[in-house]
Length: 226
Image (cartoon, helix red, strand yellow):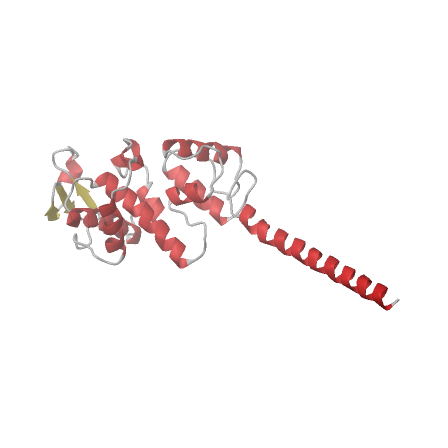
């Protein structure tokens, strides 16, 4: 009789452990699934995605934070343009390419900024001296601080017509190692341009307005101005 009670108690204990393990496992899985912005998702992250897509001319809908069919199609086009798997889901790689962090941690935000800034530096300043690469990154960051431009890094970079590298395919080329280093230096506060908001290569730009801007400094092939 005593042995039977021990066996029963052990069985109840074993069932309890199995139940707790099952619940814990399912609780762990839920955030991973919800972390992806996809069809049917709602919230601030979806609004950020829509802003990036609208700045690139890929999305014409409202910034409403609702991941509907139009947002999904725009995400697919963005993924195709950036050499990503085309599934219409804004997973970690897609968010990273958009300059949107999928985590609230500051370290993850920082790495996302480095990646996006390095990509535009590599595209716009490939072949330029290192100081010139940092300078291009500094101009992008100066625009983020300026009230005349979008107030986010992704907003500035993907602003329609702001950078030719976005439209001519250079933005999708592999990122050089020096661009990553230049991005970190720019984010750490090095600004060789002393606050410039524009730069151009006089051999490639015929824009009269740009040529009329007061030149602050010249680095490599680029003239930097305010």
